[in-house]
Length: 122
Image (cartoon, rainbow, N blue to C red; front, side, top):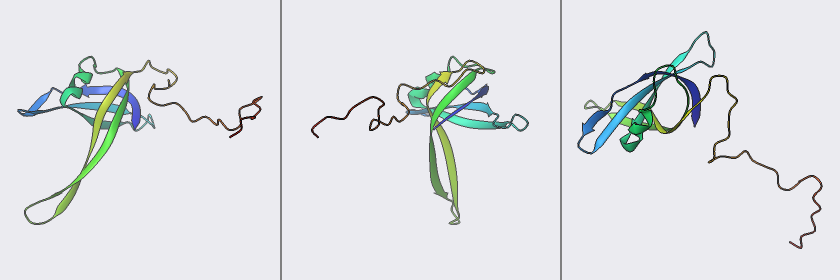
């Protein structure tokens, strides 16, 4: 999944344990400019370094995975939590047209190429 928006805040790296660190990124997402949303993303482990060059006001395209998990408290009540985990960030020039990612190319119909006679024996 990906989303484009403006960096609102870049959090400090938090060393949660000896082997685990994370960092928050808040992106202002304005699908409707009158009502912007502030989306919190997490960068984990080595991905925390992706946030180093970012500053408030930068336009970015954030590629992320949506994760969800249950948690049951001592009384037996189950709650559910969602996380948006960053795996790539691209800087985007304001009002720039979307560019294709090297990992994704739009689907192409190879069955009906114009001017191509299909004379293959299979």
